[in-house]
Amino acid sequence: MVQSLDESLSNFSDRLSELIKSKKDIQIITHIDCDGITSGSIITKSLIRAGAKVTAKTAKEMSHEVIRQMRSDGRDFYIITDLGGGFAGQLDEALGHNWFVLDHHEIPPEEHDNPRVINAWKYGIDGGSEICAGGMAYLAAKSIDRNNSDLAQIAVVSALGDRQDVGEKKSFNGKNAEIAEEAKSAGHLQVDMDLLLVGRETRPLVDSLAFTSQPFIEGLTWNRDACISLLTSAGIGLKDGGRWRTPSDLTDDEKRQLIEAITKYASSQNASQIMEELIGYTYTFPSEERRSFLRDAREFSTMLNSCGRIGRAGVGIAICMGDRNRMLQEGENILVEYRKMIRDYMNILSNERWRISGSANCIMVNGEGIIPETMTGTISSLLAGSPKNAGKIVILRTNGEENTIKFSSRKSIGCKSHVNLSVLMKTGAAKFNGIGGGHDGAAGAKITKDKLDGFLDFIEDSVNGSQNQNNIK
Ligand code: C5P
Image 1 (cartoon, protein in one colour):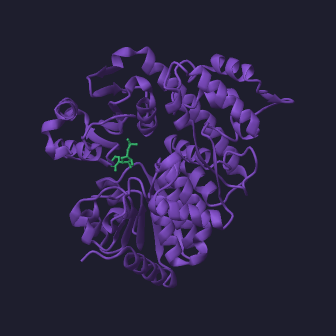
Image 2 (cartoon, protein in one colour):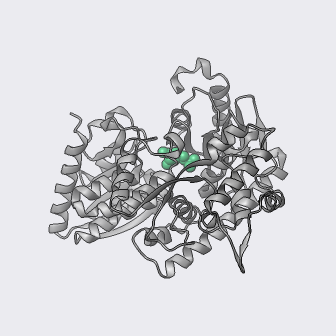
Image 3 (cartoon, helix red, strand yellow):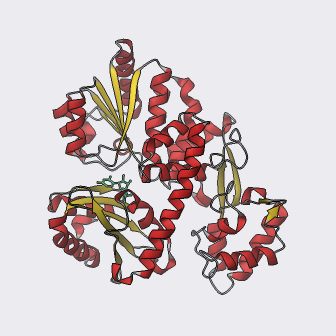
């Protein structure tokens, strides 16, 4: 019988306190993205506080190989965060009952009965919009000790990193809203209505405006020169002495001036829609220093994503667990490097047009030979944010390890397709001996190279003939 969330959490904390008392070795295995880094950190930190012998490790995805390694590592117990959906049977076989999964990805119905799977969906919580792995790990950490409620702010970062700020004006829904409220009432989080410009605390105003691509403002987005003239003609100073001003330096009057200038600039576009998207809730950690990339929770999440994407997830974990010394500088360097990589890949994709083919419902992008596997999610999300691709499904592919091809799919803004990308990637990959999964609007898959043509045909048929494909809805 399916347990309630409270029963599962109490089972979790009972088992963990036994393991801690008997000094068992515990390993956390977590995903490399922001949600993986935050969930892994939350649970690791709560276990360290409780006196556990614990180590943390990251994985790009769950696979037979990762499970084989866990088995041969021979730890006493494993906690898998933000990974593991669909693998419960194999985990039981390899590790007996010595594991828990804390996750929010959709899982097959048969996993609902497994008491070691602590997944949002089985408790009737929408894991796509109401809680992510960071939130699940936070609930688990609090079940170990109520004092772990100070980790709520890291769970807020995870929800933003997984783009779960899907309520009105970028607010949170469900459990995420409860967690943010806990952080707020403890004085760890400030929530304001403000301009949603990227790099609020750290990026010079011009870059911040130019690199904000949601909303995409034709002529302004990705055009620094146009941004300089707009800001200057709006009477907004770009510098304060020798220092570039950032969006967090703007006074209320300057914000009004900027809104007016953008509205005027975008008058021939859908200005009210643009403003609707440009103003919303911001999430600030007042205890982090001003102009630090950790002060704005969205920037914090971008930094964590960049750590994972360029193979430095350990730096992100150290920062989430409280390191504010050497790792902070490392995090900053990683952000700079990550942004440069994104610019380079986007330039290549726009120059090498042969890489992109499309139909009315979908664009297929070939990133083979240029985009590293770990960056596919970032690039497919950016492509899905571009107005050129509005309404479509974006499917990006690149080379993975050992003769594999990695796919990353996204529904772009305004996409009305009934195809559930999680089901599409999962069933498609399974048909060609690969692995796939994710969410309705964002999912990934991996297959071996020899299956590429067949998999591409399957995707095209499914996406273009979706009305008849009830099995992938
Ligand atoms: O890799 P990508 O960023 O495109 O993945 C989108 C979403 O799908 C992520 O939440 C990821 O964890 C999930 N996913 C999955 N199983 C896979 C690949 C991706 O659950 N095999």
